[in-house]
Image 1 (cartoon, helix red, strand yellow):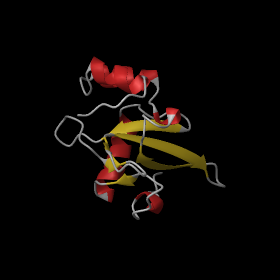
Image 2 (cartoon, rainbow, N blue to C red):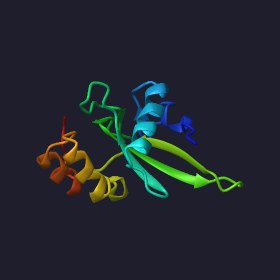
Image 3 (cartoon, rainbow, N blue to C red):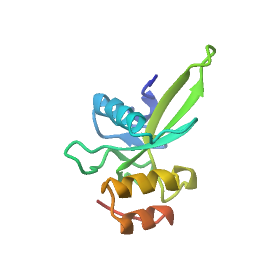
Length: 128
């Protein structure tokens, strides 16, 4: 189950903000789920409306655009996973760097080139 977090859509300068419509945010999560890019408590996604990643959000404070989404879940009282997501900041938050297995999948699907993946792993800037 996915529930968008309003704090990532309300202009809060301290939180990354989605620039894609909420319906596309949910679609990004659904694609991450169907492609096996989610693990037990976290996962990552790309917004690829035409088969290639595009920017999906802006980072907190810097307002730089980002193309990686991070999804996290918490357990409800019924033990059903409840997911929400946000535009990830791989440069300033090590926890926002996708797992190596996810990056390998993106490389094998030709969604990202090896040079971009190396920069993401190192927390370096990389653009589309």
